[in-house]
Image 1 (cartoon, rainbow, N blue to C red):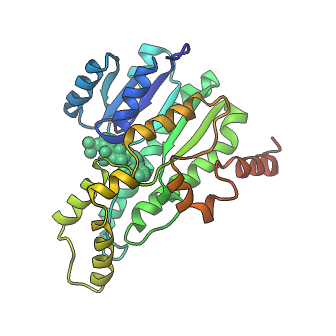
Image 2: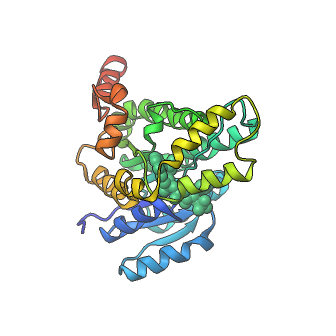
Image 3: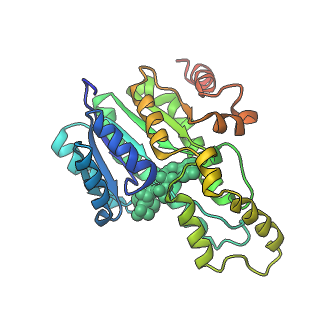
Length: 291
Ligand SMILES: NC(=O)c1ccc[n+]([C@@H]2O[C@H](COP(=O)([O-])OP(=O)(O)OC[C@H]3O[C@@H](n4cnc5c(N)ncnc54)[C@H](OP(=O)(O)O)[C@@H]3O)[C@@H](O)[C@H]2O)c1
């Protein structure tokens, strides 16, 4: 239990990582605003919070809708007079190759995973800058460091998120007192995989086109992720919530938090020299800002 409760806004709290993070941070005594685009999905979270004897607020927020974000942030700041932590967690996967995907699908993936983060971050920054403190935590992925076949659109969105976050981390702390971090999980057992598979099947599954052998090979690879394999090799959402808590409690928050040994191994050729990103952050700060 913390002796310094923080006001925390988390996006995409209806299921998975956002759901467990909201509960864990509330249990720690923080003032948690668990947001979701469809608050009617919040009943399970409410019930779970009651069962665990913790309190949190559920507010409607669609990361694709700027006015819903601004209304939510205004409501929280009006009540709390502060905004301490934003956890940009809402996100969705997508499988199909770039050539197969329609421009609408590509824009949708970028909108949820990347522009959604920009919208939410822009909404809280004026308050955090004014109070000269805050922490933006962006839930990325190993897919933000390593490009993977058939996942190229999702990886591109997470690479964009990584580039944005690494860039703003260089100046947010020295100029405005705001910490900026990335949390990078590998496989986590949530609705994420089910949702993307459902969408893939609903939109025709494996099609008779030039990519059929590639897609078939990729889907065969996905089929090896049985419940037993996931139990052994994937993380549980509460484990990601624990990493997020660690990131919040870190007196000097790092740029990057890889959430498991598996995530570190998978990204090692990219992240091995500087796993927490503090080396690159210091180099850029010193080289460009002389800070
Ligand atoms: N699961 C993994 O293997 C994995 C690995 C690495 C990174 N991640 C990242 O972890 C984050 C959380 O994913 P998860 O695994 O917890 O998956 P999840 O259980 O599918 O949760 C995703 C959340 O995002 C929400 N969301 C989607 N579109 C939204 C929108 N327009 N506005 C607001 N919320 C929206 C979903 O809401 P609805 O219920 O309304 O759809 C849901 O609450 C994502 O950023 C994901 O990319 C996941």
